[in-house]
Image (cartoon, rainbow, N blue to C red; front, side, top):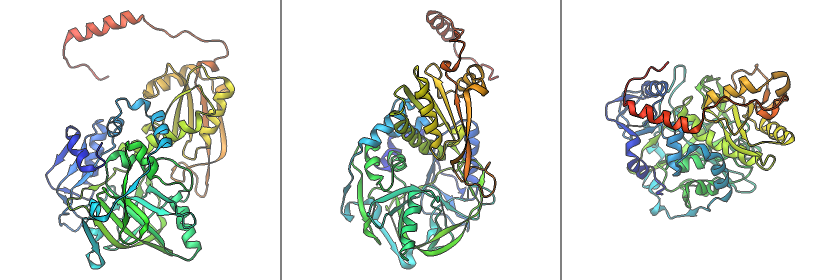
Amino acid sequence: MALDLHDYLAVHDDFVWSIDQVVDARHELTALQHTLDEARQHPILVARNVRLPDGSRSGLPLVTNLTASRRLAAAAFGLDDHRRSAEWFAGRTRQGIEPHVVDRHRAPVQEVVMRGDEVDLTRLPALIQHELEPGPYLTAAHATTFDPDSGVDNTAIQRCWLRGSREMTWFPYPASHNAANLRRFWDRGEPCPVAFWIGHHPAVVMGAQAKLSYPESHWFAAGGLAGESLALVPSMTLGERIRVPASAEIVIEGYARPGRLGPDGPFGEYTGYLGPQVQAPLVEVTCITRRHDAVYHDIGSGLDDNLVADNLAQEGALYALLKPLAPSLLNVHVPASGRRFHAWLQFRDPPAAELRAALDEALRYRRVKTAIAVDEDIDLFDSERVMWALATRVQWSRDARTVDGLATSMLDPSLDDGVVTGSKLAVDATLASVRSGRTPRATVPEASLERAKKLIAGIGPRAWPLD
């Protein structure tokens, strides 16, 4: 696998819709994504002629929808079946591959270096995605910081509003490891160094979103998930203190000075709602580096493009967390329909104590709001089958329980103002929960199913009603 976005797009050209017409950075490309999403169509979009808010054209093409479906995400990892990704993600994250460092002349991302007055964030084709957003946002920028005590780096995608040519906001979620690193620098009265890298092979992009403990570098996990050692290069401003992927597309370097905050948002979040305005650190940009043929990467916030990659990482983290407690666990799915708040767990004949332990632990995971346990006959990736299990295998008073006061996502729009913990739900939708014994499913013989398939195939192509 070539760890390079350009090579990836060339190899997977059949997934790509190249748009040569002028598209507006304000709302237009996002409207196209919404329209395609409603039709359940998820091509990779490459916009080669983006009109900026001031009416001029950006010199850089834009790619989005890189991870807009589980099929695309699986292809990036070389997986034939996305349904087995949780165990695979957990194992490859744990095994990892150590990164290696290359010289600057071997780092495509430093082919063009802009400092001082050459720095101009407004020339990037950053989008204004939704109504009421205050301006263009970086949505696929991996913020890389480090713990000043251990020197261990951390990477996470975090939003940035481009406020001017050399200043932008940066919103590290308060519970994130980057926020912890920022606080440690500010507690010392020092500016927090940060580098934002944008664009890479999607396996690296997703690998850098692996859920790790603190402090723990993402480069090891990213290499494991991508299948080869990740090449890093010292950043121009920050040197060895912050290394960035050598084959990334763009890097923005700078500092967040102690106490310098500014309004950020509202912004369309992964929940599908506008997140409220917050006070966020301000970053003074010192340097921008990029490839000479750089492609700017955008993520459709609130769409599956924003959800799939992180949800795969969450599935892997939950599988690794729950499997030691429940050996009967077969699979984990975090469905896009539940944003990042639902976890569906599949078991094979789980003992009652095992099942309860797994459900309890799943609810302790900050983002999980609802955990549902089902048997192996239920396809986790078919929401109708999961809903059927809820309808036919659950008595709410017996098989469901709520737990209050647990850590949750502050982006959950159902939370009351000022509340920082949430109420969560665990549901045992396995047949083991049916005290009166196993009720046989209504089935037909496998041989009859095969004959039915041949009969349908013999009819030939025709328009079937959708409803």
